[in-house]
Length: 271
Image (cartoon, rainbow, N blue to C red):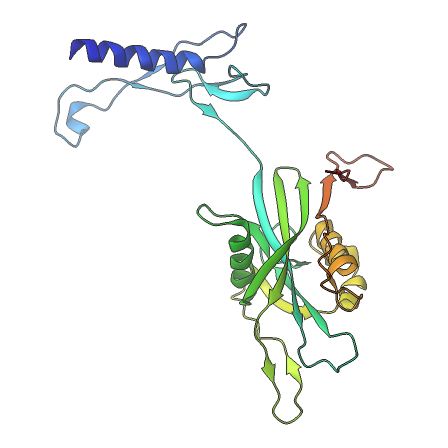
């Protein structure tokens, strides 16, 4: 037992040293925080080991190139990484469009009910959850924000933004209704509770193109819809020919550079 305890102590010491601050940094002595009096403890008394308070400082862990917040008490590294945002350009295609004419396409937009950009129109999107795929997350976000059932398909775009990476898919909106008297088709009804979305609606591409930039929540809304129009809209002549369309890949300039575009298109790589 003593040998095992000795080995365990050495392992713990090695783990702490592995994430200790790099040379040139002074490790401050951990502060001991007094424990509660025996009369205040739930167990009614007895001695308790003093609690060590965490103390963080900037340091570069071994084998890494970025400074992190490293706890000088236990060696814990507080990693801060970009969030993954998933969403879609979700489109309802009118199955009753006249034969020989381009079908009617309606794009789903949601008016944001939360900051940032509350009250502005955007795509259904949000942070990816643990335990789901990116496509599952995109479908979930569309349902939560609009009540629509969507099926995400091909990856439309990848946007690198400050603090987050966005993955947007081309999605198909399922369902709809038919007027028995006229035979006209309508997209499925939308439903919002006013929390994440103040309202949701269907828009043609021309509707979105006619909006001022300030009416849209973020520049990525127009980026994604324009890229969908150019490559996947049936109104614009898209046909399923098996051609490969690379996702649009953009990086937002941060901080902005005066006189320069607000984004940089990443170079397409030939394989």
